[in-house]
Image (cartoon, rainbow over all chains, first blue to last red; front, side, top):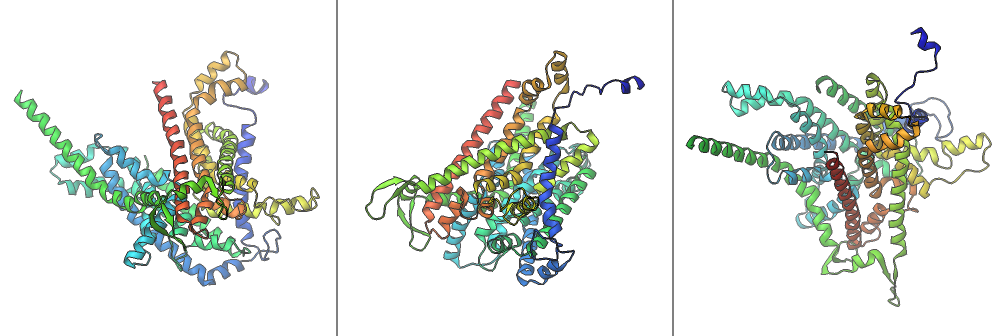
Length: 273
Length: 309
């Protein structure tokens, strides 16, 4: 030990000159803009670049803004619905497509499920706009059903991926044992498969919730008038002179996303193995 | 003999039963996706071959005008034809900015992913979480955060003026540069994550062997590390390039309608432009470019894994 400390620094295999500095700069760059946004949401003044003291006034005014209230409630209800529906559908699909020998059409199912990840959002958005315009003209049906079905569809792959990963890592032995002990397939599913799969389902539902909550493009095209969600409300506001209220709303949304993702990591760490 | 035939029949039956169940379980999800994701794309394809209605929408009459208008422009007075400059400029800007964004994220993302992959196992997950958190933060909010930093009254300009580096603000907002900075910022995690995934598996025995053979650090990087993590580089580049090409929110907020990209041009046709067939043709064009990029990706990754076997 003493000998090495007297010598030069030991040769490191992994070192590459400058990489550490770039990496640290990268992390600073990633967080500086968001941090600025959060800090200035507590600013007493009207302007983003001039600090005039700590205040919660923008949170208060956003809270009392009826348009914001309305959009926030709609966003949450929509995200909740979309995540529940997409998680149920994705769980079934994952049970159908894992732990089976490859069969004709399996690849087609994969492609179909992952399709929302591949097609640019703007293309899906205009496609849904045209389809829903046709349906509205033909049937006269209005309401949230269009947003709910669009959100459910693009949330499916996000819910599907963690559930499928969980299923593939699961041991078949317990289920075989249950079947050996004359459990019916239903009983095996409810008592063995589902409890084991639960962490994957929770993770999938959380990802779907965040994805639905964050969506701007598809919602912007599918929504009818009076169906603003928080992101589309904010997009509309960005065209005008931006009120620091937007900073306050952003901060709350950032906090919400971070808590959900943090929870996701905890769930994944605790039960993921 | 009869027994083995009966057994193989049973196995076959069981497999057929399993396949039937697979389809049954997948069908509800597939139906929803067919209704609200894949199916509507066919309508867009059909619409691109129709005539446009006067107040938006379409007239059910076959026409190739929309596809013609993607590239050409017919003068409404004398009927002469010319290249549709406006469209081509936007198409070129989309491709150019997507390339620059991909290159910039690679230059920043490569050392970052390497840095994370070479941390001790315990702290590695924390660094990884730090990359993931911005990725799960609303894209609009991240774009808005960049807007606040680079606008004329934003942090950079105010800071530079206070320190007397510049007299007046530098106009960064509503330029190609702003869009590129914004896209680099929002898509950076998409580059770092796949790069990290392939660097994590990097076999440092090979690096050690190279050093034993008197390779320099630079040579080890270019001749050993980069070739080994090439699949990660390709995945990351595709994952950044595709959403950049179809970007809508970032160019709208940071380009401010002055600097449009393909996504904004498509929106314009379905909105104020009232030319749905042209919008549909542009959408199919965008989809086509994305599919070609994906196809190249699948080809290269397959040939890569093939050569390794």
